[in-house]
Image (cartoon, rainbow, N blue to C red; front, side, top):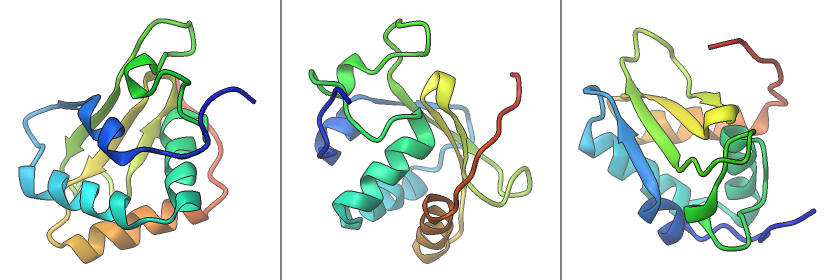
Length: 125
């Protein structure tokens, strides 16, 4: 398997885009705090959940690609919690739909749960 096994959170954060009007800066800060506190294995599982690969491209997150090989940076789209209670991934687009939680603990619980589950399946967008 190609790529770097360790996930550099600073590189990930530096090469992330934010989508939508629902992105609360406080929740985004909590997200990165939680990811930073995760173990190496938890970070790899989160990366797998969000991009379809547990490894970072050799040249880092700036070279993350879509399924067709085009560069596609990781993106976080803020969504209202009423839309979805748990984070939702779009691996073809390296995008995480992140509910805007009211506490860091709720966000941490939800992220931990989705990376522990063997979530599979897809829909067409």
